[in-house]
Length: 70
Image (cartoon, rainbow, N blue to C red; front, side):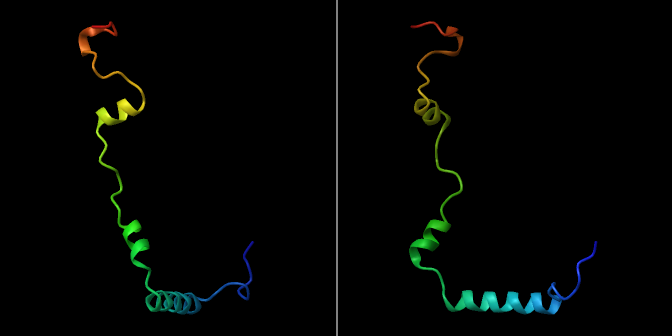
């Protein structure tokens, strides 16, 4: 069932609302800390070795050890 057009915004109203929204954003730029937090790297510099140590895996065993102790 189609909604009546009196409840929907016209494309011109949507465009005007977007322009007003972005104009308000330009007037109030974010503070430096918020900007720095937003521009952090997506992935931290963890190696596989670091992750295995964090999970409690003993990385000193060799591949061919078959789980046996040294």
